[in-house]
Image (cartoon, rainbow, N blue to C red):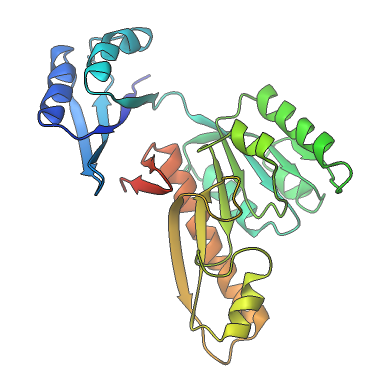
Length: 283
């Protein structure tokens, strides 16, 4: 099976970086299919390389040892991924399943290069929709008193299924640091507002009360601070004084679906690098 190699790099910017990386690839008979780079205001260098797997002179198990000396020389953080090893995604959802259904449809249509081995919910509403795709559905109800036990069960399932990415598709529970830290920069949430405006609960009600003319949605990595993680993608829709809260919710759901799907796809395609509390996204 043919495959490509994706190499992500971030490090302090220095002269000769691109030449050094390109020379390493060329030295091992590699063919660079695409290369994107960016230097932040703080002087940090970010790069995403796609290398053709066929003909590349290093086997998967050899790449790390060969690349480490160059990485040390330039103080690089680096990650490597192979397109024949799709990421394994777990989706968490509560009562509202519009984002979940959209992700499952896109996955089934081949738009999301991933495996989805399970869906977890604190409600049973979405069970039949999930099982129609042949995906196991786990109902893990939660109360304030059972939160710790429920989260332990979630972590056990994520470990059992070797999950690479957790997607909170309108999972309306605040996760504790234990879960967040286990999947730092590997957990994406969709928030139904254009952050940093209207954080927390009921943002459409807040937006309606404020009389805004634009509503939006934000997909971001989850951190311990509520709705404050690095933003991956955002989009908006225009509303007017005639729109009720229910109108805003209906319009907003359309935005939520496309924003979350875009962020998930970019992560799966290794297009997102984190720069502090910001992201660099090579679209």
